[in-house]
Image 1 (cartoon, helix red, strand yellow):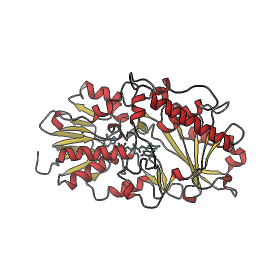
Image 2 (image 1 turned 180 degrees about the vertical axis):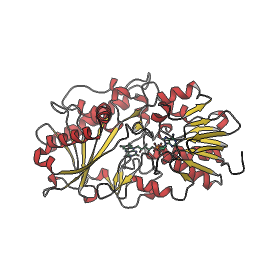
Image 3 (image 1 turned 90 degrees about the vertical axis):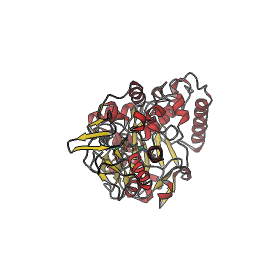
Image 4 (image 1 turned 90 degrees about the horizontal axis):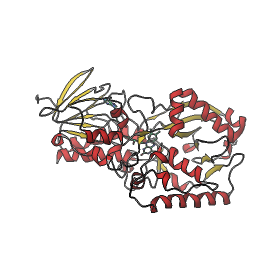
Length: 411
Ligand SMILES: Cc1cc2nc3c(=O)[nH]c(=O)nc-3n(C[C@H](O)[C@H](O)[C@H](O)COP(=O)(O)OP(=O)(O)OC[C@H]3O[C@@H](n4cnc5c(N)ncnc54)[C@H](O)[C@@H]3O)c2cc1C
Protein backbone atom coordinates (compact mmCIF):
# COMPACT_ATOMS: atom_id res chain seq x y z
CA UNK A 1 0.00 0.00 0.00
CA UNK A 2 1.04 3.56 -0.61
CA UNK A 3 1.43 5.70 2.48
CA UNK A 4 -1.91 7.45 1.86
CA UNK A 5 -3.90 4.35 1.04
CA UNK A 6 -6.59 3.81 3.69
CA UNK A 7 -6.80 0.63 5.72
CA UNK A 8 -10.36 0.17 4.54
CA UNK A 9 -12.43 1.38 1.59
CA UNK A 10 -16.16 1.39 2.26
CA UNK A 11 -18.41 1.31 -0.81
CA UNK A 12 -21.71 3.11 -0.22
CA UNK A 13 -22.65 5.81 2.30
CA UNK A 14 -25.99 4.40 3.46
CA UNK A 15 -26.58 3.25 7.04
CA UNK A 16 -24.16 0.32 6.81
CA UNK A 17 -21.37 2.37 5.26
CA UNK A 18 -21.78 5.24 7.73
CA UNK A 19 -21.87 2.89 10.72
CA UNK A 20 -18.79 1.04 9.45
CA UNK A 21 -16.84 4.26 8.92
CA UNK A 22 -17.75 5.57 12.37
CA UNK A 23 -16.66 2.32 14.03
CA UNK A 24 -13.42 2.12 12.04
CA UNK A 25 -12.45 5.68 12.90
CA UNK A 26 -13.37 5.15 16.55
CA UNK A 27 -10.99 2.16 16.52
CA UNK A 28 -8.19 4.25 15.02
CA UNK A 29 -8.32 2.74 11.52
CA UNK A 30 -8.18 4.88 8.40
CA UNK A 31 -10.98 4.61 5.86
CA UNK A 32 -12.52 6.27 2.84
CA UNK A 33 -16.20 5.93 1.92
CA UNK A 34 -16.97 6.04 -1.81
CA UNK A 35 -20.57 6.95 -2.58
CA UNK A 36 -21.97 6.97 -6.11
CA UNK A 37 -24.80 9.37 -5.31
CA UNK A 38 -24.62 13.05 -4.48
CA UNK A 39 -25.92 12.67 -0.91
CA UNK A 40 -25.40 10.38 2.06
CA UNK A 41 -27.96 8.08 3.69
CA UNK A 42 -28.88 5.80 0.79
CA UNK A 43 -32.34 4.40 1.44
CA UNK A 44 -32.63 6.63 4.53
CA UNK A 45 -33.28 10.06 3.06
CA UNK A 46 -35.33 13.01 4.35
CA UNK A 47 -36.26 16.01 2.22
CA UNK A 48 -38.65 18.91 2.74
CA UNK A 49 -40.21 18.53 -0.68
CA UNK A 50 -43.70 18.72 0.89
CA UNK A 51 -42.85 21.66 3.13
CA UNK A 52 -42.00 19.52 6.18
CA UNK A 53 -39.64 16.59 6.78
CA UNK A 54 -40.59 13.74 4.45
CA UNK A 55 -38.76 10.43 4.53
CA UNK A 56 -38.50 9.00 1.03
CA UNK A 57 -37.32 5.61 2.36
CA UNK A 58 -36.96 4.40 5.95
CA UNK A 59 -39.72 6.03 8.00
CA UNK A 60 -40.00 4.23 11.38
CA UNK A 61 -37.37 3.05 13.82
CA UNK A 62 -38.64 -0.48 14.39
CA UNK A 63 -37.70 -2.59 17.40
CA UNK A 64 -36.87 0.68 19.09
CA UNK A 65 -35.56 -0.83 22.32
CA UNK A 66 -32.69 -2.45 20.43
CA UNK A 67 -32.42 -0.04 17.51
CA UNK A 68 -28.96 1.59 17.46
CA UNK A 69 -30.50 4.84 16.16
CA UNK A 70 -33.05 5.23 18.97
CA UNK A 71 -30.68 7.25 21.20
CA UNK A 72 -30.38 9.78 18.36
CA UNK A 73 -34.09 10.16 17.68
CA UNK A 74 -35.05 13.52 19.27
CA UNK A 75 -38.73 14.53 19.06
CA UNK A 76 -40.86 11.56 18.03
CA UNK A 77 -44.03 9.63 18.60
CA UNK A 78 -44.50 5.95 19.30
CA UNK A 79 -46.81 5.06 16.41
CA UNK A 80 -48.11 1.97 18.22
CA UNK A 81 -49.79 4.25 20.76
CA UNK A 82 -51.95 5.81 18.01
CA UNK A 83 -54.79 3.36 18.08
CA UNK A 84 -56.83 4.70 15.18
CA UNK A 85 -56.34 2.35 12.28
CA UNK A 86 -59.17 2.59 9.80
CA UNK A 87 -60.19 -0.18 7.46
CA UNK A 88 -62.18 0.64 4.34
CA UNK A 89 -64.59 -2.07 3.27
CA UNK A 90 -65.46 -1.09 -0.28
CA UNK A 91 -68.10 1.55 0.41
CA UNK A 92 -67.64 2.48 4.08
CA UNK A 93 -65.26 2.28 6.99
CA UNK A 94 -65.28 -0.77 9.26
CA UNK A 95 -67.16 -0.63 12.56
CA UNK A 96 -65.41 -1.22 15.89
CA UNK A 97 -66.71 -4.81 15.90
CA UNK A 98 -65.36 -5.43 12.42
CA UNK A 99 -62.02 -3.95 13.37
CA UNK A 100 -61.85 -6.29 16.38
CA UNK A 101 -62.71 -9.22 14.14
CA UNK A 102 -60.00 -8.17 11.68
CA UNK A 103 -57.53 -7.83 14.55
CA UNK A 104 -58.32 -11.35 15.77
CA UNK A 105 -57.94 -12.70 12.22
CA UNK A 106 -54.53 -10.96 11.99
CA UNK A 107 -53.45 -12.62 15.25
CA UNK A 108 -54.58 -16.05 14.00
CA UNK A 109 -52.82 -15.49 10.67
CA UNK A 110 -49.53 -14.63 12.34
CA UNK A 111 -49.90 -17.44 14.85
CA UNK A 112 -50.29 -19.92 11.96
CA UNK A 113 -47.01 -18.67 10.51
CA UNK A 114 -45.12 -18.85 13.79
CA UNK A 115 -46.49 -22.31 14.66
CA UNK A 116 -45.80 -23.85 11.23
CA UNK A 117 -42.93 -26.38 11.22
CA UNK A 118 -39.78 -24.59 10.07
CA UNK A 119 -38.57 -27.56 8.00
CA UNK A 120 -38.62 -27.83 5.11
CA UNK A 121 -38.44 -24.15 4.30
CA UNK A 122 -41.15 -22.99 1.89
CA UNK A 123 -43.10 -19.91 0.94
CA UNK A 124 -44.96 -18.18 3.77
CA UNK A 125 -48.17 -18.41 1.72
CA UNK A 126 -48.05 -22.22 2.01
CA UNK A 127 -48.82 -22.13 5.74
CA UNK A 128 -51.25 -19.23 6.07
CA UNK A 129 -55.01 -19.48 6.59
CA UNK A 130 -57.07 -18.99 3.44
CA UNK A 131 -60.62 -17.91 2.74
CA UNK A 132 -62.97 -16.09 5.06
CA UNK A 133 -63.64 -12.41 5.06
CA UNK A 134 -60.19 -11.13 6.01
CA UNK A 135 -57.38 -13.49 5.06
CA UNK A 136 -56.58 -12.27 1.53
CA UNK A 137 -56.40 -8.70 2.85
CA UNK A 138 -54.12 -9.75 5.69
CA UNK A 139 -51.85 -11.61 3.26
CA UNK A 140 -51.69 -8.49 1.10
CA UNK A 141 -50.88 -6.33 4.10
CA UNK A 142 -48.14 -8.57 5.52
CA UNK A 143 -46.74 -9.38 2.07
CA UNK A 144 -46.56 -6.51 -0.35
CA UNK A 145 -47.24 -3.69 2.11
CA UNK A 146 -44.90 -4.70 4.95
CA UNK A 147 -42.37 -6.96 3.27
CA UNK A 148 -42.51 -5.34 -0.20
CA UNK A 149 -43.15 -8.72 -1.84
CA UNK A 150 -46.00 -11.23 -1.97
CA UNK A 151 -45.93 -13.93 0.74
CA UNK A 152 -45.59 -16.54 -2.03
CA UNK A 153 -42.08 -15.17 -2.69
CA UNK A 154 -40.81 -15.07 0.89
CA UNK A 155 -39.02 -17.80 2.85
CA UNK A 156 -41.01 -18.91 5.90
CA UNK A 157 -37.80 -19.28 7.94
CA UNK A 158 -36.66 -15.80 7.00
CA UNK A 159 -40.05 -14.28 7.71
CA UNK A 160 -40.13 -15.83 11.18
CA UNK A 161 -36.45 -15.03 11.83
CA UNK A 162 -36.69 -11.33 11.03
CA UNK A 163 -37.89 -9.13 13.89
CA UNK A 164 -40.07 -6.21 12.86
CA UNK A 165 -41.71 -5.71 16.22
CA UNK A 166 -42.44 -2.48 18.04
CA UNK A 167 -42.05 -0.05 19.50
CA UNK A 168 -42.20 1.68 16.10
CA UNK A 169 -41.03 5.25 16.52
CA UNK A 170 -41.59 8.09 14.04
CA UNK A 171 -38.99 10.85 14.39
CA UNK A 172 -40.19 14.36 13.61
CA UNK A 173 -36.94 15.27 11.86
CA UNK A 174 -37.06 12.14 9.70
CA UNK A 175 -34.93 8.99 9.80
CA UNK A 176 -32.83 10.24 6.90
CA UNK A 177 -31.84 13.43 8.66
CA UNK A 178 -30.73 11.47 11.75
CA UNK A 179 -28.54 9.29 9.55
CA UNK A 180 -27.16 12.29 7.63
CA UNK A 181 -26.20 13.97 10.91
CA UNK A 182 -24.31 10.85 11.98
CA UNK A 183 -22.34 11.02 8.72
CA UNK A 184 -21.04 14.52 9.38
CA UNK A 185 -17.26 14.75 9.41
CA UNK A 186 -16.68 11.31 7.92
CA UNK A 187 -14.26 10.90 4.97
CA UNK A 188 -17.03 10.40 2.39
CA UNK A 189 -16.47 11.10 -1.31
CA UNK A 190 -19.77 11.74 -3.07
CA UNK A 191 -20.16 11.12 -6.79
CA UNK A 192 -17.61 8.28 -6.64
CA UNK A 193 -19.33 5.26 -8.19
CA UNK A 194 -17.24 2.10 -7.94
CA UNK A 195 -17.47 0.09 -11.15
CA UNK A 196 -14.68 -2.47 -10.60
CA UNK A 197 -13.21 -4.11 -7.51
CA UNK A 198 -10.05 -6.24 -7.68
CA UNK A 199 -9.47 -8.51 -4.71
CA UNK A 200 -6.78 -10.81 -6.12
CA UNK A 201 -3.79 -9.00 -4.63
CA UNK A 202 -2.51 -8.51 -1.10
CA UNK A 203 -5.08 -5.71 -0.70
CA UNK A 204 -7.97 -4.46 -2.82
CA UNK A 205 -8.15 -1.99 -5.70
CA UNK A 206 -11.35 -0.13 -6.53
CA UNK A 207 -11.93 1.79 -9.72
CA UNK A 208 -14.43 4.19 -11.22
CA UNK A 209 -14.59 7.12 -13.63
CA UNK A 210 -12.95 9.19 -10.89
CA UNK A 211 -9.78 7.02 -10.79
CA UNK A 212 -8.37 4.22 -8.64
CA UNK A 213 -8.01 3.67 -4.91
CA UNK A 214 -6.08 0.95 -3.10
CA UNK A 215 -6.85 -0.24 0.40
CA UNK A 216 -6.17 -3.16 2.69
CA UNK A 217 -9.81 -4.23 2.82
CA UNK A 218 -13.10 -3.41 1.11
CA UNK A 219 -16.52 -3.30 2.76
CA UNK A 220 -19.21 -3.42 0.07
CA UNK A 221 -22.58 -2.09 1.25
CA UNK A 222 -24.50 -1.63 -2.02
CA UNK A 223 -27.89 -3.34 -2.25
CA UNK A 224 -28.28 -6.90 -3.50
CA UNK A 225 -30.26 -5.31 -6.36
CA UNK A 226 -27.12 -3.46 -7.46
CA UNK A 227 -24.94 -6.55 -6.96
CA UNK A 228 -27.29 -8.84 -8.88
CA UNK A 229 -27.45 -6.36 -11.76
CA UNK A 230 -23.65 -6.35 -12.03
CA UNK A 231 -23.33 -2.75 -10.83
CA UNK A 232 -19.82 -3.61 -9.61
CA UNK A 233 -17.54 -5.97 -11.55
CA UNK A 234 -15.40 -8.17 -9.31
CA UNK A 235 -12.00 -9.61 -10.28
CA UNK A 236 -11.78 -12.46 -9.64
CA UNK A 237 -15.49 -13.19 -9.96
CA UNK A 238 -17.28 -13.69 -6.65
CA UNK A 239 -17.44 -17.32 -5.46
CA UNK A 240 -20.53 -19.29 -6.52
CA UNK A 241 -21.71 -19.42 -2.90
CA UNK A 242 -21.69 -15.61 -2.62
CA UNK A 243 -23.47 -15.20 -5.94
CA UNK A 244 -26.12 -17.70 -4.86
CA UNK A 245 -26.57 -15.72 -1.63
CA UNK A 246 -27.06 -12.48 -3.61
CA UNK A 247 -29.65 -14.05 -5.91
CA UNK A 248 -31.36 -15.65 -2.89
CA UNK A 249 -31.94 -12.21 -1.36
CA UNK A 250 -33.90 -10.28 -4.00
CA UNK A 251 -35.11 -6.75 -3.46
CA UNK A 252 -38.82 -6.23 -2.94
CA UNK A 253 -40.37 -2.93 -3.88
CA UNK A 254 -42.23 -0.56 -1.62
CA UNK A 255 -42.96 2.74 -3.33
CA UNK A 256 -43.72 5.57 -0.97
CA UNK A 257 -45.67 8.60 -2.10
CA UNK A 258 -46.73 11.79 -0.36
CA UNK A 259 -49.25 14.51 -1.10
CA UNK A 260 -49.64 17.99 0.20
CA UNK A 261 -53.24 18.09 1.35
CA UNK A 262 -55.68 20.30 3.14
CA UNK A 263 -59.41 20.06 3.76
CA UNK A 264 -61.41 21.74 6.45
CA UNK A 265 -62.56 18.52 8.07
CA UNK A 266 -59.15 16.86 7.63
CA UNK A 267 -61.17 13.91 6.22
CA UNK A 268 -62.13 13.11 9.80
CA UNK A 269 -58.59 11.88 10.47
CA UNK A 270 -56.37 13.02 13.33
CA UNK A 271 -52.56 13.14 13.04
CA UNK A 272 -50.97 9.72 12.45
CA UNK A 273 -54.28 7.96 11.76
CA UNK A 274 -53.82 5.26 9.17
CA UNK A 275 -56.15 3.80 6.58
CA UNK A 276 -55.96 0.61 4.60
CA UNK A 277 -58.53 -0.92 2.28
CA UNK A 278 -59.90 -4.40 2.39
CA UNK A 279 -59.34 -6.37 -0.80
CA UNK A 280 -62.40 -6.78 -2.93
CA UNK A 281 -63.89 -5.86 -6.27
CA UNK A 282 -62.03 -2.79 -7.54
CA UNK A 283 -59.37 -3.12 -4.85
CA UNK A 284 -57.25 -6.18 -5.71
CA UNK A 285 -54.01 -4.55 -4.59
CA UNK A 286 -54.96 -1.55 -2.45
CA UNK A 287 -52.55 0.99 -1.03
CA UNK A 288 -52.21 2.36 2.50
CA UNK A 289 -52.28 5.89 3.92
CA UNK A 290 -51.05 7.80 6.95
CA UNK A 291 -52.51 11.20 7.72
CA UNK A 292 -51.04 14.49 8.88
CA UNK A 293 -47.74 13.41 10.48
CA UNK A 294 -47.05 15.81 13.37
CA UNK A 295 -50.10 17.80 12.26
CA UNK A 296 -48.42 18.82 8.99
CA UNK A 297 -50.44 19.46 5.83
CA UNK A 298 -49.46 16.29 4.07
CA UNK A 299 -50.20 12.60 4.01
CA UNK A 300 -48.20 9.70 2.76
CA UNK A 301 -48.72 6.13 1.72
CA UNK A 302 -47.31 3.02 0.14
CA UNK A 303 -47.84 0.60 -2.70
CA UNK A 304 -45.79 -2.58 -2.63
CA UNK A 305 -44.91 -5.82 -4.36
CA UNK A 306 -45.87 -6.74 -7.91
CA UNK A 307 -48.15 -3.75 -8.37
CA UNK A 308 -45.43 -1.35 -7.23
CA UNK A 309 -43.00 -2.87 -9.78
CA UNK A 310 -45.59 -2.61 -12.56
CA UNK A 311 -46.36 1.03 -11.72
CA UNK A 312 -42.67 1.91 -11.35
CA UNK A 313 -41.98 0.60 -14.85
CA UNK A 314 -44.70 2.92 -16.18
CA UNK A 315 -43.21 5.92 -14.36
CA UNK A 316 -43.99 8.18 -11.41
CA UNK A 317 -47.13 9.60 -13.06
CA UNK A 318 -48.68 6.12 -13.10
CA UNK A 319 -48.09 5.65 -9.36
CA UNK A 320 -49.46 9.12 -8.65
CA UNK A 321 -52.61 8.43 -10.70
CA UNK A 322 -53.11 5.08 -8.99
CA UNK A 323 -52.71 6.67 -5.54
CA UNK A 324 -55.19 9.42 -6.39
CA UNK A 325 -57.67 6.77 -7.56
CA UNK A 326 -57.13 4.72 -4.39
CA UNK A 327 -57.82 7.81 -2.28
CA UNK A 328 -60.86 8.81 -4.35
CA UNK A 329 -62.32 5.33 -3.83
CA UNK A 330 -62.51 6.12 -0.12
CA UNK A 331 -62.99 9.87 0.05
CA UNK A 332 -64.82 10.54 -3.23
CA UNK A 333 -63.93 13.13 -5.84
CA UNK A 334 -64.06 15.88 -3.22
CA UNK A 335 -61.38 14.07 -1.24
CA UNK A 336 -59.25 13.46 -4.28
CA UNK A 337 -59.45 17.12 -5.24
CA UNK A 338 -57.94 18.02 -1.86
CA UNK A 339 -54.71 16.20 -2.75
CA UNK A 340 -52.14 18.69 -4.01
CA UNK A 341 -48.48 18.43 -4.96
CA UNK A 342 -47.26 14.83 -5.08
CA UNK A 343 -43.92 13.14 -4.60
CA UNK A 344 -43.34 9.55 -5.73
CA UNK A 345 -40.16 7.68 -4.85
CA UNK A 346 -38.16 5.79 -7.48
CA UNK A 347 -36.40 3.05 -5.49
CA UNK A 348 -37.28 0.37 -8.04
CA UNK A 349 -35.81 2.10 -11.07
CA UNK A 350 -32.95 4.07 -9.49
CA UNK A 351 -29.78 2.16 -10.53
CA UNK A 352 -28.19 2.87 -7.13
CA UNK A 353 -30.81 0.74 -5.33
CA UNK A 354 -33.03 -1.31 -7.72
CA UNK A 355 -35.57 -2.06 -5.02
CA UNK A 356 -36.51 -1.16 -1.46
CA UNK A 357 -35.27 -3.96 0.78
CA UNK A 358 -34.55 -7.66 0.68
CA UNK A 359 -36.51 -10.77 1.52
CA UNK A 360 -35.06 -14.27 1.32
CA UNK A 361 -36.55 -16.48 -1.36
CA UNK A 362 -37.91 -19.82 -0.08
CA UNK A 363 -34.93 -22.04 0.82
CA UNK A 364 -32.54 -19.09 1.11
CA UNK A 365 -32.69 -18.02 4.76
CA UNK A 366 -28.99 -18.93 5.16
CA UNK A 367 -28.06 -16.47 2.39
CA UNK A 368 -27.91 -13.59 4.87
CA UNK A 369 -25.14 -15.23 6.89
CA UNK A 370 -23.41 -16.45 3.71
CA UNK A 371 -23.28 -12.94 2.27
CA UNK A 372 -21.90 -11.63 5.56
CA UNK A 373 -19.10 -14.25 5.60
CA UNK A 374 -15.57 -12.86 5.05
CA UNK A 375 -13.91 -13.57 1.70
CA UNK A 376 -10.19 -13.77 0.94
CA UNK A 377 -9.17 -13.98 4.58
CA UNK A 378 -11.30 -10.93 5.43
CA UNK A 379 -10.00 -8.69 2.61
CA UNK A 380 -13.47 -8.48 1.06
CA UNK A 381 -16.57 -8.04 3.21
CA UNK A 382 -20.22 -7.37 2.50
CA UNK A 383 -22.48 -5.42 4.86
CA UNK A 384 -25.94 -3.88 4.74
CA UNK A 385 -29.52 -4.74 5.60
CA UNK A 386 -29.35 -7.93 3.52
CA UNK A 387 -26.56 -9.28 5.75
CA UNK A 388 -28.36 -8.95 9.09
CA UNK A 389 -30.36 -12.06 9.92
CA UNK A 390 -32.50 -10.59 12.69
CA UNK A 391 -33.15 -6.99 11.57
CA UNK A 392 -32.98 -7.58 7.81
CA UNK A 393 -34.60 -4.96 5.64
CA UNK A 394 -34.23 -2.17 8.19
CA UNK A 395 -31.93 0.69 9.10
CA UNK A 396 -31.15 -1.11 12.35
CA UNK A 397 -29.97 -4.20 10.48
CA UNK A 398 -27.91 -2.15 8.05
CA UNK A 399 -26.32 -0.13 10.85
CA UNK A 400 -25.50 -3.12 13.06
CA UNK A 401 -24.16 -5.09 10.10
CA UNK A 402 -21.77 -2.27 9.10
CA UNK A 403 -20.66 -1.79 12.67
CA UNK A 404 -20.05 -5.54 13.17
CA UNK A 405 -17.82 -5.82 10.09
CA UNK A 406 -15.83 -2.75 11.13
CA UNK A 407 -15.34 -4.14 14.65
CA UNK A 408 -14.19 -7.45 13.16
CA UNK A 409 -11.61 -5.65 11.06
CA UNK A 410 -10.47 -3.42 13.87
CA UNK A 411 -10.44 -6.22 16.45
C1 LIG B 1 -39.83 3.03 0.85
C2 LIG B 1 -38.96 2.42 1.92
C3 LIG B 1 -39.45 2.35 3.21
C4 LIG B 1 -38.65 1.82 4.22
N1 LIG B 1 -39.12 1.84 5.51
C5 LIG B 1 -38.29 1.49 6.51
C6 LIG B 1 -38.67 1.74 7.86
O1 LIG B 1 -39.74 2.29 8.13
N2 LIG B 1 -37.80 1.37 8.84
C7 LIG B 1 -36.59 0.80 8.56
O2 LIG B 1 -35.83 0.49 9.48
N3 LIG B 1 -36.21 0.56 7.28
C8 LIG B 1 -37.02 0.91 6.25
N4 LIG B 1 -36.61 0.77 4.96
C9 LIG B 1 -35.36 0.03 4.68
C10 LIG B 1 -34.09 0.83 4.98
O3 LIG B 1 -34.18 2.10 4.37
C11 LIG B 1 -32.89 0.06 4.45
O4 LIG B 1 -32.91 -1.26 4.95
C12 LIG B 1 -31.54 0.67 4.83
O5 LIG B 1 -31.57 2.07 4.70
C13 LIG B 1 -30.46 0.06 3.95
O6 LIG B 1 -29.18 0.60 4.25
P1 LIG B 1 -27.87 -0.01 3.57
O7 LIG B 1 -26.72 0.75 4.10
O8 LIG B 1 -27.88 -1.49 3.71
O9 LIG B 1 -28.05 0.23 2.00
P2 LIG B 1 -28.23 1.59 1.15
O10 LIG B 1 -29.00 2.57 1.92
O11 LIG B 1 -28.76 1.16 -0.17
O12 LIG B 1 -26.74 2.13 0.99
C14 LIG B 1 -25.91 1.71 -0.08
C15 LIG B 1 -25.28 2.95 -0.71
O13 LIG B 1 -24.46 2.50 -1.81
C16 LIG B 1 -24.55 3.46 -2.85
N5 LIG B 1 -24.11 2.83 -4.09
C17 LIG B 1 -24.82 2.03 -4.93
N6 LIG B 1 -24.04 1.62 -5.94
C18 LIG B 1 -22.81 2.13 -5.72
C19 LIG B 1 -21.55 2.03 -6.40
N7 LIG B 1 -21.42 1.30 -7.53
N8 LIG B 1 -20.49 2.71 -5.92
C20 LIG B 1 -20.60 3.46 -4.78
N9 LIG B 1 -21.75 3.58 -4.10
C21 LIG B 1 -22.84 2.92 -4.56
C22 LIG B 1 -26.00 3.89 -2.82
O14 LIG B 1 -26.16 5.15 -3.45
C23 LIG B 1 -26.30 3.92 -1.32
O15 LIG B 1 -26.09 5.21 -0.78
C24 LIG B 1 -37.36 1.31 3.93
C25 LIG B 1 -36.87 1.41 2.63
C26 LIG B 1 -37.65 1.95 1.64
C27 LIG B 1 -37.07 2.08 0.25
